Amino acid sequence: MSAPSLPARVGVLGSGQVGRVLAAGFQSHGIDAVLGTRRTGDAELTAWSQASAVPVVSFEDATAFGDTVVIAVRGAAEAVGGLIDGAGGPEAFAGKTVIDATNPLVFGDAGPSLEEAEGSGGERLQRRLPDAHVVKAFNTVGNTLMVDPDLPGGPPVMFIAGNDEDAVGVTGAILEAFGWRWLNVGGIERSRELEELCILWVAIGTRSGSWGHAFTLLQP
Image (cartoon, rainbow, N blue to C red; front, side):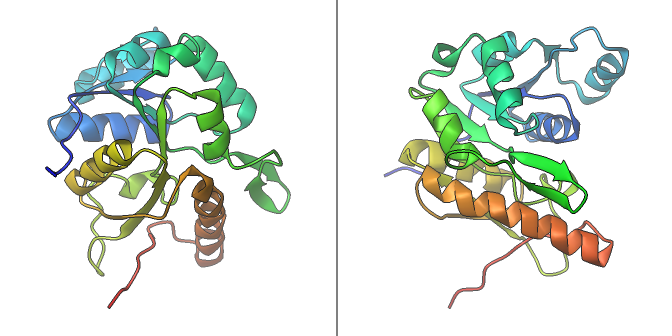
């Protein structure tokens, strides 16, 4: 079996820091990317687009553009549902690899926690997009390390989860291009543990006052 190839075109949905970092990362690694947003006329995004050479388009156009789509909005259920509607509905994602970089966080006095709902955010996204191939990835590290991480201990490990072998392979190829090692931990139901890992990542950062950390795995 040949190794999975990188996608030809990626639509990144979400114009916050995570979306911008990932879209610019794809473009800098030779993968055509666009950034989908509700704020297509925003002056700040226009300036960012000119500097990064990444076109800024609507959610619908970004979804249609990408053979792979990255979800990079706030991960609460209402926000993700609004994004899917803005992109043209579940059918717009049919047959595509959909990388879920979100965490369904709610914020309280004690810090972030996971939204209480049936199943993880990754599982809910796969149910909402039954004809897409959802892979949870990029949710266990800060945006400054998502592309080309440079840490003293060497490349960290990105833990990912998804049901479709080909979509997992495409996601792994992206991670390798971005300078990561990666490990598939199982089907999309393992998103539960990966989203909890985000909470641990935040707890470590809060306690240490530093946010330049990532997880790894040592194996014999």
